[in-house]
Length: 276
Image (cartoon, rainbow, N blue to C red):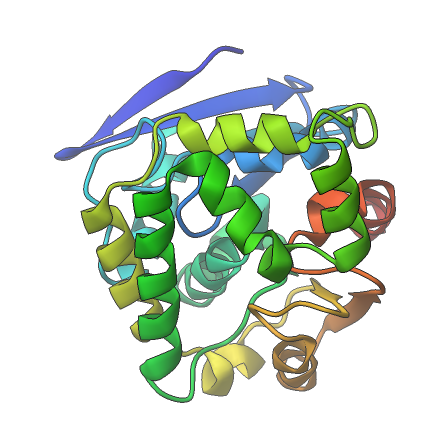
């Protein structure tokens, strides 16, 4: 299915429904400063078995600008999109900021979540300093432009082996799905604005679920990366202790972009969890 739009109140959301028309729904929530296309490495395998819904968050891609400045607005948007699409319940998967949105959504609307998958994310920040630093970093990336920003942040986002390979050959296709050039093009397409980045950074400050995580009883898969320099694996280890029905898997030799650099392993873990 091609991109479609949902007008919900004063906001418009761009979404796609892919895969099996009669399959069980899997809802994908993307992260900070990107858009729904960031799931390019997961969609192919998921659509063989499920109906996959991916959408641009408020303030991302082709959806309404600017971004939300509170995490609960993102959670409410997710609920409203499910209402619009007449989806009563779904498996929900979020990566990075998307994982934070997914946590808040699952805690506020638990009846709408079957299984929850959280990838390279956190339950909160000890102070506002972390979100402020990250916000400034992302604003600096906007000034650089997509290509320079990609290479400057590759040291943080990617495990060293992959970063060096990409620098050597930006056209190299990983798993026949994506290349560094493809991802740079993604960043160039409908890019975030400075206000989107500021608002998303402010939303990070409103995210704190650690003490509430024990309330969510459904099966939850936590996927951490051994060398994640944005949301360190220790965050997810702490979340695992709090979530009563959770499984934690650590992807070795991987950074924050583990879903893209360790695609076969990550996708197999996700599919095995959903099939149980």
